[in-house]
Image (cartoon, rainbow, N blue to C red; front, side):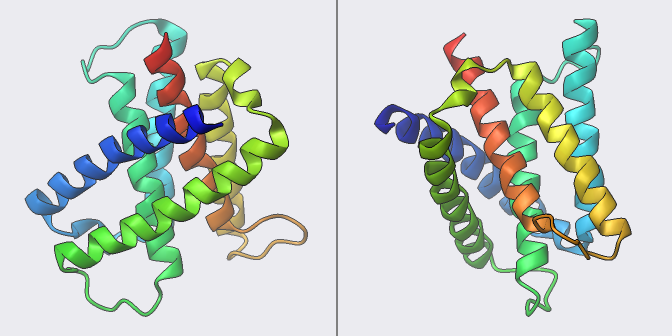
Length: 179
């Protein structure tokens, strides 16, 4: 598992670096987005990945790895929007945005460790396409929960699905790196 921890940390560091650089470029303009809008952004990214995987064509030229990185970062943004209800300012200081990113990246890492233990690193034997499908499935679940005004009868909440999507995207990036 120590190899997984290192690989996971390396991927998150790349994602964090991109988040940090984009925060310098754009500020926290993403704060205007409602969680449902972030869910739609996740859908756009995951659907593009699946289309490229199915057709073998990439006409835009941006690689699939960048889209998985975007999924990680959009998931963290969505979790911040859901969990940090007391934040009133749309524009956060860069340091505060980074602290929140780190807080939820750490929570995702800890969740991965617990699930990875129980599931015995089953993701290592999965195909990247299957991880894409699982991300899309989670997106559709989140959309349904959002349409139900966040109420569930016996399912995990929206944030749990964002954490799972984030971790699936990290796993996909790890698998793609080892190919």
